[in-house]
Image (tube, rainbow, N blue to C red):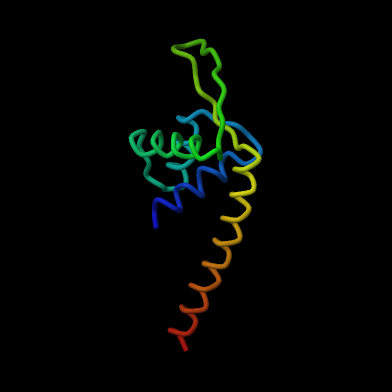
Amino acid sequence: MRKGVLEFCVLSLLAGREAYASDLIDKLKASHLIVVEGTLYPLLTRLKNDGLLTYRWEESRSGPPRKYYRLTPLGQSYLQELEKVWKDLVLSVENIMQLQNN
């Protein structure tokens, strides 16, 4: 389940803007999702291989070139599907929790 949520969060962070992997890690950590490079990079590669992400290289002033990721049109569509599934899941869990309290 955590793997699917992490995928959803990464795609959401890339909605409408591109980002460097370290930026993604910082934003995930700021949201209390503990993520290390060894988890994120394979996920980014898989999402790229699935056609959901693309990237571009940009020269860095302080080190090697950086790879900036962004959603493809397919990735944007997939994210919209995930958002619907997420909202349905949250509603279902909330309904179950209300049943427990009654």
